[in-house]
Image 1: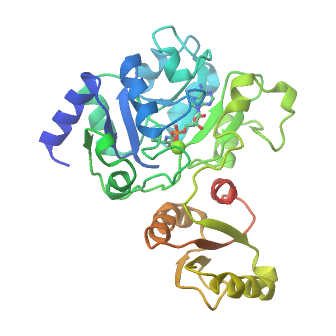
Image 2: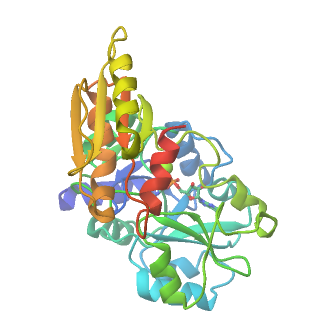
Image 3: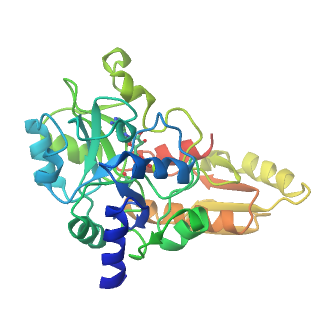
Length: 330
Ligand code: TXA
Ligand code: MG
């Protein structure tokens, strides 16, 4: 990324064109958030259904507040402690935010990304930037500029290369519009950190939340029940406990016509035979998250027809990784 490419990206965005840019979580496919026609291009390029709202990226708290009608004390605490960072807040939107951004709901998702290139771009453009992950709908999120090129190619005017993403998994989406803060999507910032900052219990959609308390927009997002964040290959999520059964199943699958088996295992974890390509990730949630999408992209690119993923440990810090792995198997 050069000062030239940054200035060009800012100018393209202001003119209503699409620009892919790095954030600390994953690469985003950006458009002028207050320009409905520009945002429509995001939906077209991704093949994203109109019911799925997009996150608006801003440079700071003041710019976030300009998009919402209420700035609750919880938002203020979280923003002070966790922004810039992998936390997206759902708040009541102002009329300036076009309906296409929010899928017609009265809430908007906002976050200040922590990547220096993203912040520079936001400041240079001087506008809020709507950006989902820069991948086709249901495909893997990109954590390098090359992933964006592979997935979207000519559909995007410019791709800013800011190197591989540090966090590697999408932001945590937290709904602050109800009585209790509710995590709609686990992500780069842990539920424990959010609860600690707020000094109160935080709900998690689909886990400890009474569904009747949820607002309707929360139910449709994020991702719904769709296969999501998924490689092209079939995916098995395998418990290390049943390794002999797993090995038998792999041996059978490997004998199939044109079968190519990839495995994503843990350091010091399962060892399998009959697998064409094995990648390993560390037993540490942050490091694992950073490498996850790149590993799946690699196995996909190598033409794997089946990817066997060793289940990561259950425990604190693994909820976001587990969520993405479960969605990848759908
Ligand atoms: O880390 C990230 O969040 C990345 C980077 C680029 O910032 N972005 C990202 O965007 O993952 P996307 O569109 O792939 O996922 C955003 C999620 C979607 O599942 C969407 O349903 C949810 O946030 N969302 C957006 N606006 C919402 C709203 N008003 N209410 C509820 N959920 C919302
Ligand atoms: Mg996405």
